[in-house]
Length: 402
Ligand code: NIG
Ligand code: FE
Image 1 (cartoon, protein in one colour):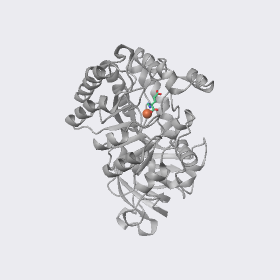
Image 2: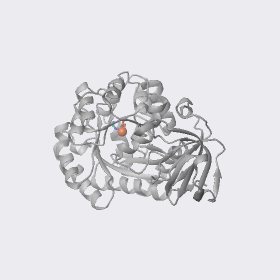
Image 3: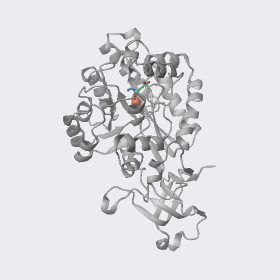
Image 4: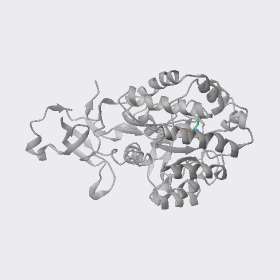
């Protein structure tokens, strides 16, 4: 396929830097599921000129967007907790009273794998409609070996049901279920590590995540889980410093984590540790907004230290019922002061890094042909609009969406 007359945001800045990498009046050559060539129309090699042409009439074309942090598989909803928080209850209070994540656990345990898939697909369709071609999906609402496996199997099936790549993350260390109350060490050994081994044996795990927080697990609790991930050859990531500073990001960085996510309470030491390890900072403005948090993640310090920042939805029923990547980008700019260029790097180049994927996130020869075509002419438009997503169409693995 030959895409012509595109306003191309390649995300390859000048001389190996990162940025929009804009090319006006550009062409993209796609062979199979890969990009074969991209550049100005005037420089299109003659060999490609006879390919079947798809004229995008000047529209903006970007890499397909990547949502590197979602909890898209779950049952039930938590609208009643939303009401309670508006009346003054905090996320922590609700969690300590047995609501929060644990109320979604009850609903998810009661649901079948088919049911979980059926409930996830409409959410995934919304992410796709906001330009996503790759999404990460976590477990973490099962909290038994069988229920964690059920969630991961449902997550894998999303990728066979929709034109989207799914990366699965094992998150059994998300909360301590009532039957293990006060026994975090036993839970990690008997459920988190056991379910990780079983899920890995079934090919269901691309990465291992955990929730490091006073209402969840300490770094000491998590050390054996991260050691097991290493033994299995799996990369780790961590929900860190969302509500308090537990030194989670530095702990994750010491384990060579792909990413540390949330980070509102990240310390200067945490920033330095992430910079040294090359750990991506995944910022989640949907959770910040929903919880009406006032502590901002240290964006200027991360930028200064050269830590790559990714932007994701954190799509989940409690802290972030947000199913639009472009709205996440808007919130990252308005609430966290990212530039629109940083926001787009955050859902392309840096999101790919946060998932350990080297074959996508930019438009360049040999990378996957995952593209988003927008009714827009400047990439800042993707972050600027609120609610309306200007997606025109997508190309997924070289195929145009029907
Ligand atoms: O990323 N912080 C922990 N985990 C999720 C929240 C999940 C939930 O509240 O159901 C998050 O915000
Ligand atoms: Fe999360």
